Image (cartoon, rainbow over all chains, first blue to last red; front, side, top):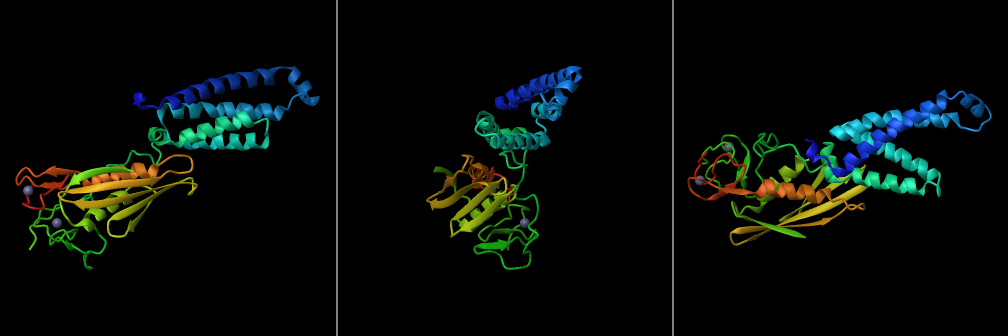
Length: 174
Length: 119
Ligand SMILES: [Zn+2]
Ligand SMILES: [Zn+2]
């Protein structure tokens, strides 16, 4: 299973896990520092921003796990977080330009077919096994067949009119 | 443009296109439209139509072979899901095997030979 994981997904998962852990440690260190209340009171630090980054760091951990194991919801979560981050960076232009570029690359990467395949996201090239005889055509069983076709005498599926036998049920045609 | 060829099982091009359409319709989120007598157009949309790619599969019967050509237009970001789907559907719809009784070519997923009824 793991050998199918795209390299970029592995890298993103590791970066998110490291970033999440460091972010949590950093935020806790700051928030438990006795000087923080004074600094916040003096408006030297924005305490809301620290809580926000703590929240992001906590959220990053399950997403990293989802990336690592290929869980579908984590693909959506990754896309949503990157999208949010892109909007935030867009509002901070020109300062946010580097972050914006990174977000765009991540979003573009997540949309690639092989990546979507890893996350089992609908729309990837991996498709459920289907076959033509899987279900009898319930549509138009009694109407006229399409040009050059006839309905099998037994299973009523549309088959070429030149067929001697039905390829689906094997019935001999009159 | 890519081109592949398959041995003729039936000269009924309508049946060929029906097989292709059936395959494409079993895949999620595709728009499938018949184009004239020998082609099918596939549109794949992602992100609410923002990323749209299109592929056209055209069949050409020549001698004992169908020549299948696929042209495509990738999405603005370069993805080409329509082409990916079209390639998979073409293989599923048109791949053949030989009946081990009458040796004629039949479709890979056919349970019974349409010529001799062999299972
Ligand atoms: Zn039948
Ligand atoms: Zn046969």
